[in-house]
Length: 256
Image: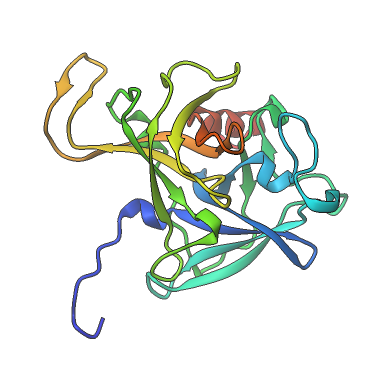
């Protein structure tokens, strides 16, 4: 910067990426995602409904005319310097029309996928999401604040950094919603946030697994899961899929 100010960027702000959903050459929507690393290979994490264009509960098309997404444009960080970006295409389908993405063994009933990234080179800087944040010694409880880090309505800041939308845990996190590995949050979310990482960040007022109550201390972050949308259009109640699903998909695909 010309005035020599230090610009501070949260480490998680560089992990969330803007996705454009494309049918052939037509952009038909947007979403969010983040990258994880397994055995030196990179995989995009987002929702099944984002890459399929279908409702995972009914398998009905979510897109006008029943069209199917063919690829994504992912806006990556450039390796030149932080604050510059490169837009790259990733095919969603193999040449025979089968999906390239990796699903959970329950298929579309788990609205989380891993997409192996093919279009990565030295011009791109990858900031993998640290899955160990799911093991932070914090016990999430109802009414605690959460952050959904993504791109509501495609909105970004500072070029293409994500928006941190705030909500609250709306159900006991260890209980399943609708017999799915999902808990609920109360948040004013918008289209484009599907696939966002959801985190709990606190410096006190939480319990640990040993039963301690931390009243004040260093700021800690717990990865809670992957946001996938609201349970009903006007409910403001959203679904978060648990982090363990990422590991289960990777193991089912034999990449770990």
